[in-house]
Length: 106
Image (tube, rainbow, N blue to C red; front, side, top):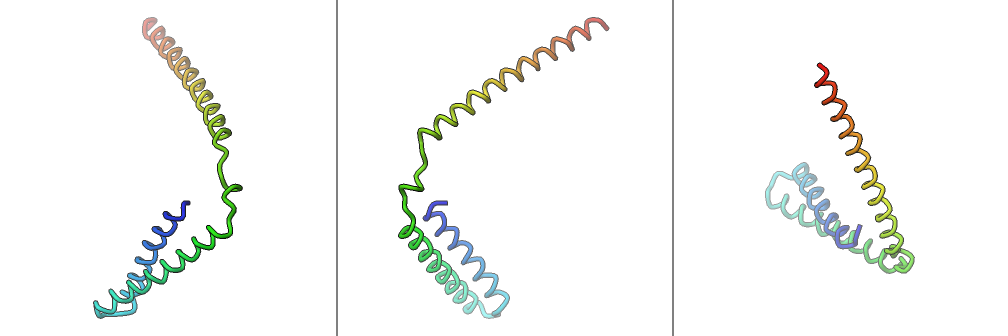
């Protein structure tokens, strides 16, 4: 998951955790809104610190994907899927042919 997605997801989770906990804890709407905002900010700051430490301590050269290897693997699977599809069509046509022969005999 990219860091931006992680932070956005954490903000949404923090909002709903704050909303649920504030609805359970308070009856006044002002306190519910305030508590929800406080929870959202706290979870946002925790997620931001986590993402910052992740970016600081992770070596990106080791985490990069090998695009050439990925492309060759995907091309291999694409060819295999094409083979399976052709095989499936030939089996289907064979079954249709057998079915039409059986219908003609009856």
